Length: 531
Image 1 (cartoon, rainbow, N blue to C red):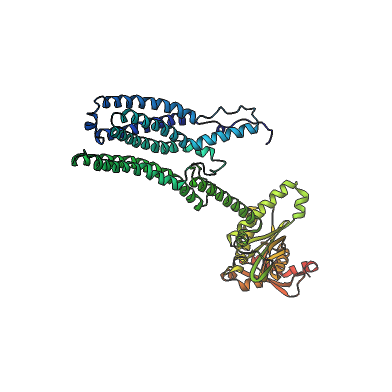
Image 2 (cartoon, one colour):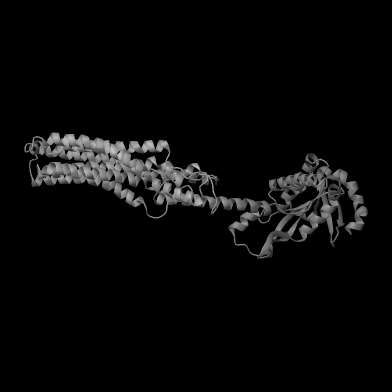
């Protein structure tokens, strides 16, 4: 909407208050963890007894500097971190679209780079601490300066690693918010592989380097008794285990959470819920995978909608066959049964009722027809004004297509009589060989059935309108039916309009008595139109 103005939605604003508070705690907590690592290593690993002898004030000087710097680092880190993840005020309601887009890009950049920005703040502060404490001690004792520097480095690594993972967790909802419309792109942030390697390096490799350095110092400088060296190994090994476990757990959660979310959404799709979506909250390849899953489900949802719409127009069986196979023009000879149903008095109905009432009546009529046909494994091939053609045995084969069509005819006759007021219809049932396939052109075609059973069923429908029960079946249908044939009785035989051979007329047994007398005189009364 170039040049248009619009208001700013909630998604266009910066970080929520609760998120900013949580980020403040994230800046403080890892610093406390890092400080604890420094104190533990300094107390149990560094050879302070021998080294402080050269400078008695060294210990007091380091403790005062440590406490002051920790407090200052927490304050500076909180303020600096706040500005690193602060988003400028959102444009007002009258802002143009370009201003809104620019603001959205700023919000996106801050949210996606939040973990890296705050981890960088911590890294800079601890790097400054490393330089400060080395300078404080190196002039008194180079060995003490190096030892203190290594200790501060261990604390800094622990702080940076924990900070990055905690910020990722805190910003998860914000990341989902900004990635809702556009998935992660480019290589701005570490991927899954770098995340795993970084977790090992920061949580395990660096503390173990401390163990190696302690062992090297014992070999080069001496001053370590067996007990002392054992304590050093135990302390550094414990730090490696604790910090490594913490970083690994946070990394595992960062990796597993998007996968588990995908799995839950996948189960919903497997159960047929195509409205399932997963929030995109990961900035690595897993976030791209989450977005790809949503795109895939959207495609499935659209495909299912088209399939449902397609099925409503041509029938579910035809739609399924078309989707699962290559569509070709032409057809094949199939043994089918056909049911044709035509409304009685449709001309009078249209002339005596308003159009909307006519439509309502037709819809009620066709609803019954569709329900009965589908219950008996048939499908509606087409609607022709106030008539419908149902086919049994194509495109899906049936063991007893004729029997299904005959049962549907009886049931349909009963339901029309009992459920539809002031509506009656003629029903004709026939069976035999017909050509079933796609008729038309590659640009426009339909699946249909063409053959003698279709014509015969249409002519039977005309005759059925004149008898009790309004349903007639041909001898061809009864010859092909199974047990259902026992429920029908022949009442007449005649040559139907447009045909050369006689057709035996059958009605359901419950209508046979009333139809015998009508059948005997029906040929004479209908001769001009049926001949």
